[in-house]
Length: 264
Image 1 (tube, rainbow, N blue to C red):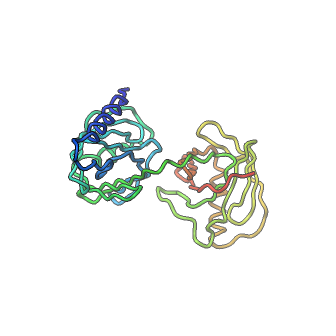
Image 2: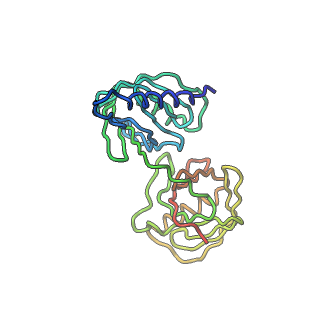
Image 3: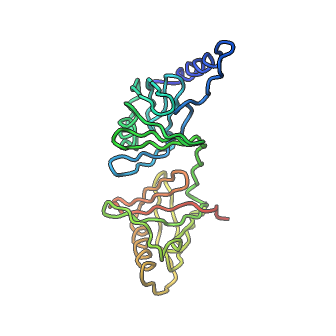
């Protein structure tokens, strides 16, 4: 894989030379326009939002840009129009096969040509001519919450290729925790449950669920039936990105959950 580290020292040299202007000159603005080191948060294009992998970043200094599409590294030439726009011409990039290929392809497509700049104190948004956007921040990335010992609250259910938020009247009621010893417990939205869970790599399997037996109606009952079927369906692929957990079954059903405080 081609390494891009040598670019960093070159970019530092460009900045150092720019800072040493002639006597009497106004000091150079250290962060004109889009310059800086940015962590990519999301892309919005074609009517959908794609959330960035943890490694996605964009660094700009002088007339050089480098970064990571989420898996593959890239370089680009940059021509700035003050603080209002920047034109990027892609340079070299690595060509590894990546897990989130859809994001990689979309990011590479957007990060070229003339992009207008919307700059805040710790945020940067680049916009293409068709209105697609790349949202970035200078704030450090939130560490991924661990799968175990984290209190997870279910926020949406997926099925049939679509995701639906948990209905408002059931919001916050479906939650669970996986203990380090494999004990799983929580609420299905109405009844409390317990089970044994086995984690192997990126897969988790829940054993038979034991639950209380209250009659559950309405939205809470619908959420409970969906979660009972999902957790009992066999191996689930799991993924945690920052504070969000995704569980996915082979048939396309699944859930997303947000992290709360660590369980005792």
